[in-house]
Image (cartoon, rainbow, N blue to C red; front, side, top):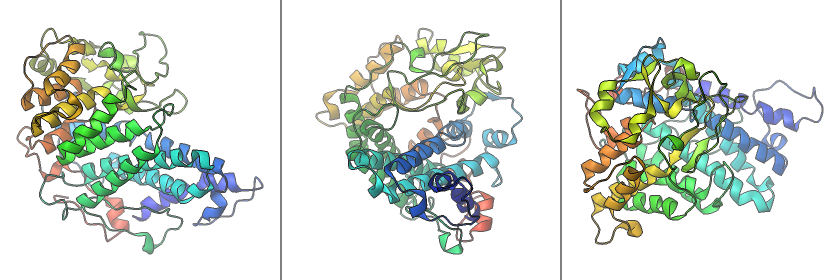
Length: 457
């Protein structure tokens, strides 16, 4: 992991500059004294903003890992015509351990984690009135990143024994120097999930109900709902989803299209799009700080994208009924594209309220309790989502709800993880095949011999 830690040290450079008393008071070194970097409450608050910035990088929550998960799950929905070798490998399910996108997601994930560890190590410097919130935000970020790293680079929780299967390294303290003592082996899948649960549970307890566009207690609950669903812990998944729904803080957008950033008029410059009514958590994108990486490949050239990942008309016809208003969420620009990502500066939606209704519905169907968790039947939850699409429903079987997830959450990065947790093969590829797991980047295994490579690589 030498390369990771070198990058993490570089991520501290801005904090070092902030601590210098004179503009040129910069000593070349491979270590940073924590006491010199984070001195005041403001320093720690700035460091937290840096963690959000790293979280939203292209190769993390900016969208690319979610897109790669869609590509791994693809059989006939996505028509790939791009020249990026990294994504060609992914859609062909033949990722190499030198894949730069895979390496960058690992790098950015641990850079973000190190940012958070720096914040938490200096939490006593934060003004008391702000301390709980800042600590909660930091833990939300770390828990979310560990969850996404382990489900990309480790086997699914239900694939064999999670107490034995290898996940990713757990690092909970700041890295301030690059030595062999920093090289950490991979924790088990179960250990990483438990760390994510601990962070997110503590974050939910510490965060406020409203917090601008930063993480809230309901963002933490929403991520917990997703995590518990992935584990197959349906009681906790339903309860966490219910906490988001019953909070009253969010509403389904009036139409499906309004749940996503506004599509600019052709010929008009793209403008930043704020959070929608149903965004429980979203990554903020502006035309100064970056772009929506989903748009990079799912968006046509008219809307700032490369136009490399079109959507099959055959797939649309096979899945959306004629009166399903979600059919209108595709546009023709030579090929068909999803308009979810037709604004290159639109925020990247990470958790939507619609997902929470579907998690609660699925969990209650699987549990079949005498009284549904949340006091709402699965049929009612399913109908809430389908009504927005102009549809009615008379049944809410597990198959009905899983199909609705496929339609409602299409191309948002859920397909691979849903296939794994439901043990659904992807074409002729087994749901637990080694080539559906990211390799540990070669640059990491070369630097850190304690990192065991994944099967098949």
